[in-house]
Amino acid sequence: QVQLVESGGGLVQPGGSLRLSCAASGSIFRINAMGWYRQAPGKQRELVATITSISSESRTNYADSVKGRFAISRDNAKNTVYLQMNSLSPEDTAVYYCYADVRNNPWGPRIDYWGQGTQVTVSS
Image 1: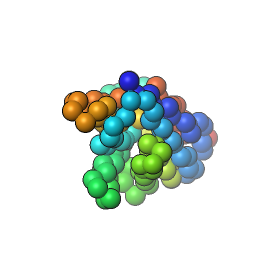
Image 2: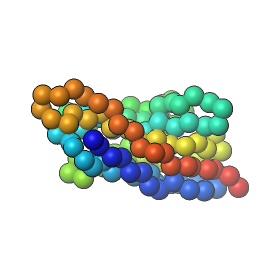
Image 3: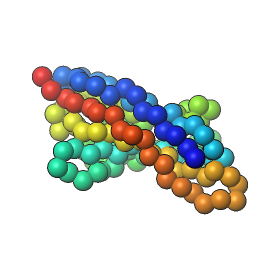
Image 4: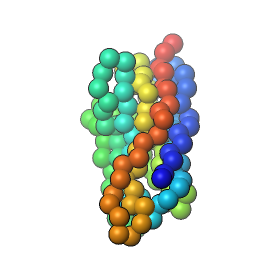
């Protein structure tokens, strides 16, 4: 099993910034991709950003709504992914969920694990 622990959510004023962190631990052979989704009240969960590490390179993907404002990064040595969120607006208010695409052992399948979610509220 793999556990994902998120931190960094909270209340911020419009135009402000927050940095989310998500640390993975447990039975990890390799983490292929990590990322963030969010779910606002009454809405479906949506992709925010993902980062995939291939050899020494990383590829990132962002939702159009956050491009230029959010930045995802990853510390492979710590199995941790970060989401730097700038220029926040009330539309960014949601529960943010971390996920990791993990292989528990060299011969096993890839499995998606999810964090418990962290609330981000943007309000004046």
